[in-house]
Image (cartoon, rainbow, N blue to C red; front, side, top):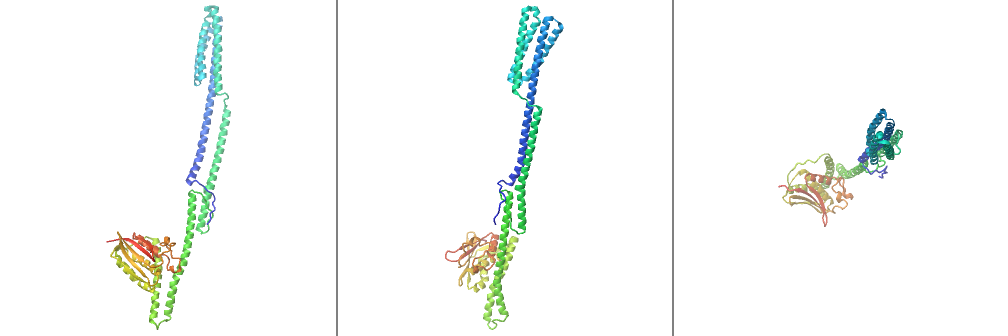
Amino acid sequence: MSRKKVNSKSLSLQQKLRLLVALPLLFLFVFVISLTALLIVAQTDVERVERAKETQLAGNDIVQGMYKMVSMAYLYSQKGDATVLSEYLSSKKSVKPQLKRLRAVCATNVSAKQSAERVSVLLNRLVDTLDELTDASKSGFVGYATALSSSVITCRLIMQECAKIAEVQRQIHPQPTTNTDWQRIIFIVLAVGLLSCVVVSVGALRFVHLDILQRLSLIMRNTESLGRREPLTESVGGSDEIADLDQFIYSTDDSLRQLERTRQEFVSMLTHDMRVPLTQIQFSVGLLAEGAYEDNPAKRQDMLVTLVPEIGRLNRMIDDLLTANKLDAEPLKLNLETLSARELLNQVCEAMQIEASSRERSVKVTADDSKVLADQFQLSRVLTNLCANALRYTPANSVVELRCRAEDEHVVLEVIDEGPGVPDELAPHLFERYRQGSEEQDRSGFGLGLYIAKSIVEAHDGEIGFQNRLDRGCVFFVTLKAHS
């Protein structure tokens, strides 16, 4: 039956389910990491902006304080007013915390830190110069002019350093992003993340629908078709657990079809094989019932003798059917006892004499005194089946030999015939049920005899087999453990 494949998947079902879980988690992880990184950048940007503003404010405060000190010192040197001197001292005192704040803000940048240190040195120098300026009346005009000129130069240098600090901060963050810009960026990221989440979810659902649900639905339809004994549709394909289940369904379908063919062959075989002896029995009994050969007792006796093997044949067929069915239902129960191999073979030989005579064959026994632990009824059944087969295939006026010999710790029971041997094509399947020869003369049962014999021997922990002889004939052997 050809199978059209829906699709082919190389991943197992477990790997696919892991992928369905891992993809959203991976996306969530990437999204959280990206959003966290964005927030960190935004926080860093805000901190830089605040630091730049604080640096600018600190520089402006220092410059304003510096100008106030200079102006107060100059006014005091001109007027000598105590109130102006107090303002000067107050402004000088307020510059120190502003300078400390500037140095703290610039501590994270080497260039800004160096400029802040220079501003500190220059401010100290300016304070010393202004202190001299407030005492210039005591040192005369020359001292006053020198202090004034020095203070102007120092103020210019301080302003230059403050400008450098501002420039450094501008280079660190030349174009700061506003809060509005950050809000817009975060909104865009969230929108993209939400859209991506929808896309991933739809893709996962589509994957589950196409690759799992659709294939499971196809398997359900195939299972329903299997129950109705209708042809299956198409295979799901792939190499995952769903594909294994699909293969199992197809294998079950093949097995059921093979079983159906075997059943039909068995019914046909049953009809054919039972009709032959029944026809013979019906014909002979009918003649005898009509009074045929009443005046010829010898002929009448010969006809009755011919019925014996046919009736035995029917009895063996029915017995084989019942035994095979019982073997399928439960293990074989054995009644083990110590048996003499010679006596067992003699009993089989005696039981087969009538059938051998009707076929113009003979049976003989060659055995030693070996003993085995076995079920007498079941083992006799095996040997009787092998002997009956040998009589059927052995040419007329030939001898079937039942032999027993000891081999190490085992006893080998052999049935030797002079027939054509087992064909090579039949040899691998000889002990399977419903196996018979291909020729019409080989078909005398249901093909259950050797299957039952093998089951019985294996229940004894023994071995059964055969070997074609080099000249002519075949040897069937049963190997059992010797028992003292």
